[in-house]
Amino acid sequence: MRIKKEAPVQKNEELEVDVIDLTYQGMGVAKVSDFPIFIEDALPGERVQVKVLKVKKNFAFGKLEKIIKASPDRVQAIDRRFTQSGIAPLQHLAYPKQLEFKQHQIKELFNKAHLDVQVSPTIGMDNPSKYRNKAQIPVRKINGKLETGFYRRHSHDLIPIEDFYIQDPHIDEAIIKVRDILRDYHVSAYNEVTHKGCIRNIMVRYGRATHEMMVVLVTNGKNLPHKEDIIKAIQSKLPDLDSLIQNVNDSHGNRLMGDKNVLLAGKAYIEDELLDTKFLISPMSFYQVNPIQTEKLYSLAIDKAQLSKDDVVVDAYCGIGTISLAMAPKVKHVYGVDVVSEAIEDARKNAKLNQIDNATFVIAKAEDQMKKWADEGIRPNVVVVDPPRKGIDPTFIESVLEMKPERLVYVSCNPATLVRDCQALIDGGYEIKQPVQPVDQFPQTPHVESVTVLERGK
Image 1 (cartoon, helix red, strand yellow):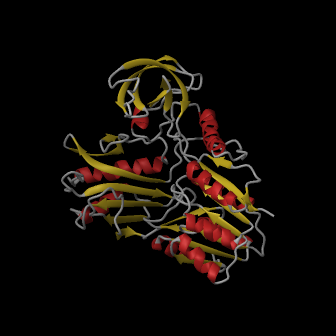
Image 2 (cartoon, rainbow, N blue to C red):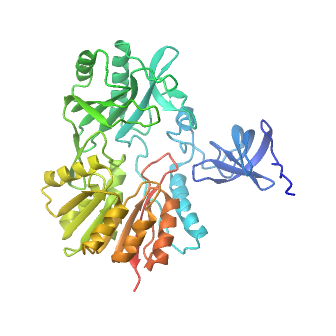
Image 3 (cartoon, rainbow, N blue to C red):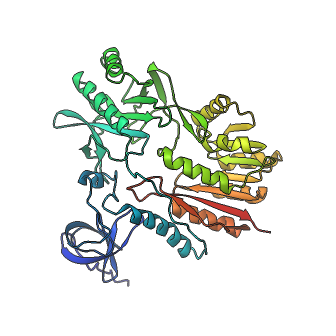
């Protein structure tokens, strides 16, 4: 008979503990009899007083009540709400230490997988704030008033916020002006419980190179009360606005956007520029949110790919063609694939916009299309992947191993799936000879992007 093991801490218990580590989510870790307690806003090297909030079988969560001994790496937080909402959960950690933490994240995961891989210092930003070129801000009714802000972490309780700290100030300004117009016309905010109300979210995109702006009103159904008056008011308050769109999202789930867009004023897209390449960006486009760091990230990917004029490249998860089209002038041909049809439509338009005729874009799952290309005799020298957080599909890896490209360049937004996928590729005969290069795409948060090059063994 198995005896149930009791946790050494109880809910609502108050403790003094030493913080010994940071989790990959940026929470402090303390241990009581080897039982981990995860503490938001706590840093390694600190002694803190915590209140136990929740006890699970193998760990607990605690609330920081008091810092008894502070870490030398602690800095003054800009606004407590940025931690509560998850906008900037590392704002209390000195920026050089944030960069070290992100390098350490990747190195530790490779070590745990028993892979001897070098990881270079993280490439950071001169100004690690006000960098985001896109915001998708929920709208809710609080105390009888329409508010914009961000959800408290692990909940759907909205915290009203006007200055988001990590967003381009032009975006913050636009959100406030649109919010005030919606208030003036008494437009109702969406209620998740009753599924009533009109405005669900306000999305703003801003082109850093072009200064073009798009505002998207995400509505719960087709109806937008006082539509013409609201359009005129927004154009008056934002005279430089290039695109105003209504997105219809009548789903009952947590989808941020619906499938239907209605052009209210201006163009159906905005334009921006990365690495001397122009891009049309529509409401549904995936476009990296930190343009300064994206140029560094993609430049690294292109340099590390060691491209030549005779190379054939496959860009899996190509999106609107950001990497594909930057590589195209350097190679014989680029084949891009993405499952999102709107993204491929944008990629094809972007190829024409840049007068690039050696790029082919296909709508399909990357793993399915790789098999088709292999059957058609297409043998790339270089494969580039920039997958979502879940990483690359095992069948995609099988296709890569069958195609045997000389190099695979892996742009990752999730170190855990990066290491998992690298293990599978190494087992298939690939090697990591160059150091992995982390890039801080999301300052003030625990997230990190990186570039890894895998080369086919002899």
